[in-house]
Every structure is written in C-alpha cells, then in structure tokens.
Image (cartoon, rainbow, N blue to C red; front, side, top):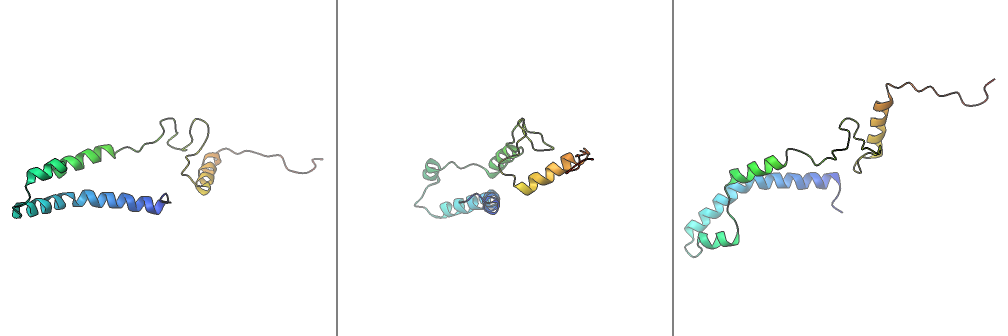
Amino acid sequence: MAKSLRSKWKRKMRAEKRKKNAPKELARLQNILKTNADVLMDEVKEIATVLPAEKVIKKEDQEGDKMDMDSKRNQKTLLDEHGQYPVWMNPRQRKKLKSKRTKGKNKHKPPKGLAW
C-alpha cells in the first residue's frame, strides 16, 4: 500500500524532520529530567542510548551520500547488462530514454507495401 512516490517522499521528509528536531528533543528531555527529582538520567541511559546530535547527523550523512544503484547499470541510459530498465521506471520514462538513445541513429526502414 505505501509504495507510491508521494508516500515515499513523505516518509523521507518525516525522517529529515526527525533528524532536525533530535537535538531539541534531547535537550528538552534532559531539561525535564533535571527538574524532576524522581527520575534519574542513569535510568534513562539504561533504556535508551543517548548520543550527541552531531555524531548521529554525521553518521547518517555519510551513509546517505550514495544511492544503492546496480553497479552493472549504465548511468546514462539506466539499462542493465540485459538491456532492462529499473523496476521503478514507468513506460513514459522508458520511451523518452529510448527516443534519446536512438535519436542519433537514422534507421531507414523499407516502405511498406509493394515495391515495383
């Protein structure tokens, strides 16, 4: 159900928002824990790992630099070694890329019908 481009984009943006708001949430949580004497920070550390936001952001940025693309796929035409397009590509995009590919080649077809 959740495989459309819109839902993928929304999921991605929610993850970006979580990354952006993580330092604020951590600071707010620590502030609450400092004022409340009943709960200790040590107990929270046992439940969840508390990391500085800089480490988390740097780690995720390094992982997200490259897309997981097939190494055997041509970057320009997006064709793999068998001449197949990616699964996510729709027929309009395939037709457009094919027309770009064959634009330079002038294939002359013999005319249909009887040739006298």
